[in-house]
Image 1: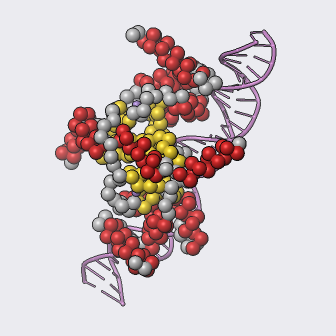
Image 2: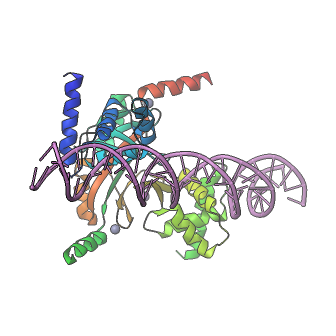
Image 3: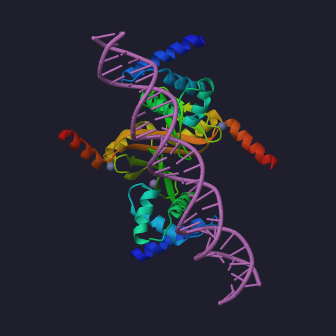
Length: 156
Length: 156
DNA sequence: ATGATAACTGATCCTGAGTATCAAAACGGG
DNA sequence: CCCGTTTTGATACTCAGGATCAGTTATCAT
Ligand SMILES: [Mn+2]
Ligand SMILES: [Mn+2]
Ligand SMILES: [Zn+2]
Ligand SMILES: [Zn+2]
């Protein structure tokens, strides 16, 4: 697949994913998505702004933040909360999956699911990755918040 | 166990955990730990500052942040990166375990490990928790960063 | 095409969590 | 008690991210 065709395919996917939500496939959003896809590491908004401004001096800082939000919202990118209270981003297929993230260089590797107990050890070996800590947290609504929400919906 | 005895036990645990690292079990750190233990929800530094200042008007904002860092470092509390780039905290035993966190009210429930694939479903039922998204990410050093680190250590 | 409408951009300003600094205070071993 | 170390609280600061708004661009129905 030529670079040009690849670019076109990316643009089409961007269009379909975004237009489903009434959002537009702009040049800036495509630039951000392409930059994410070029990197095997998670990248911060500041990183991307600096990087993109080299070739596109007109792009705005706020636009980079907003583009990242849009891409995450459209399922084309994933947000990582990096220690130090900074968000980092990676281009990701929308299927649910998890990652190995290097705290040294931010390299990211996708992992497939398995028994969590043995997972860390297996993955360390397979990827040469020294796991220091893992996080497994499920976010959602507790019973009472869930009741409250459906109650409010019923009333509306 | 009377409240008084409980308090004393907390102070002793604080002392042993902190003094192992050359840190002191101060009144402020104990106040923060007790406030954390009183809550079934994750709490932000700002929450704690406001709450503690009611009874202890002299406590400093920076001290709350620093106390939380100390407690996390000593394994007496755990940090959660709440969406919106704010850290939240919960008192936690140091054994490795995971959580259900309500995005509505920040109520936190400890979960025991099991096959990750079935986990979310089982936990939803057991706790009446509607899981919206789960995060499983392992953080550590990739092979090349790991090599670089041990190389540096050898040189030191 | 053309105009109406809604979404988007970029410049600017603002917010607020968290940190650096530093002088004063509290600790804890001897 | 005494002295070096740690901690505290006040203050000033940083910096990621969001709000605002006037000007621009995409989409769609004529
Ligand atoms: Mn991925
Ligand atoms: Mn816990
Ligand atoms: Zn690395
Ligand atoms: Zn809840």
